[in-house]
Length: 266
Length: 266
Image 1: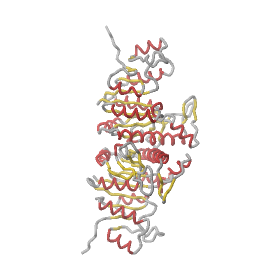
Image 2 (image 1 turned 90 degrees about the horizontal axis):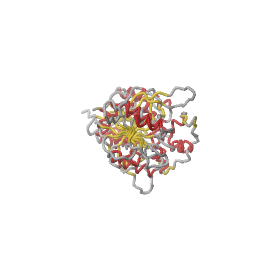
Image 3 (image 1 turned 60 degrees about the horizontal axis):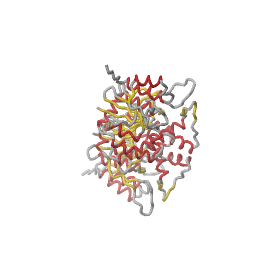
Image 4 (image 1 turned 90 degrees about the vertical axis):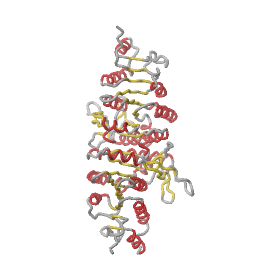
């Protein structure tokens, strides 16, 4: 089957109006689809109100036991279930899942080297059979950033990595497109000009743009991840703003499409 | 198919050791099974740590918007997902669900008469087809006390009522046994003597015991609910302690079994 995997982040989740607008667009997105989400700043805010301060090392959050409880409550409870209820209203048969539910995503606690990230997991295995069964039943899975190690431990996991792991795993048997919604309209030629979107990037173009320093810093890991997903069989990867997602589904230019194909003109 | 629906409450959930012990027993419980849970005092404790004090009217909790957020986080997030992870470790293919997931349980916000209970829902409809599909896939559903109105609103719902609604709805097509775990070993002849369990109650015995005032006060609504479930097709209802549940599954006397059958001896 054809499957769209769509990842949204804090810039949608943190704003109730934007989230409602997005869910309405998402409900009109055609075909089999899976939504992946983290929790944005909401987890930090709830944590602080309970006296649990976010602990950051090198800009990355450390997940101690209290923080794990909070992200589990906020991601898997508050955010996930409210989105499920809203999508049900929009006649989408949504089902909210952590990686523990149906053993959907097994991960391993990150080994302690220089930094102990605490209860953070890196994806090991996706239960593609189960996910396929849910899609065949007409369900719309909403997967949040909590996974488990199959030894009884929940683990906080990067939502981008989850989206990518679901996409590459499902791509072994299905045609998968991956959509990353973020705070820019796509890969831009001029960072300050939202209209300077590069509509299509393949490896040749990517290498060229890196050489010319058009693509740099934060955009490089994003695109490296996208090309890695393509290497592992994902059909194409879209990067853009959540509000333009619906245009992407109609094949209109609305963000940056990353393709493996080389367009040999000769 | 044959389905066991088991409801646990705060006297198990609130004690990590008892909960672990229960989950181990539950994992050995044979056949298709569904676990139903609320959240005990944990929701109140988290609420208080966030400055949301439980508001009670006539001994019943009022669910305002903040309280709804807290019970959604604690029931559907913290408690449900940790239980799912532990059952996965025990090789049970658990899946955690609110009533919103897969539109499992649609409820209606309780009308305001003398008291405004806030975001409290009473069960209207169970999606028995979906629940049957999950059981057929070999999944073990863990259903918590959050439902939805199919109009985008989550609602806090009594876990006993959810267990009963699931049981009576599934009983239309399946053989269903319902197990209520609570803080006593069963219906007791002498409240202070845990060994004075009445092993079997049918309607005749029930009426007799009420007349003799052996069964009174808090036990009456519990038994009335049990008989109502039997009227609606549930096979039998068991009341007892969570730690004795495994004996019940083996047909050993371990609590009180409530049956509709009248044993006509003539």
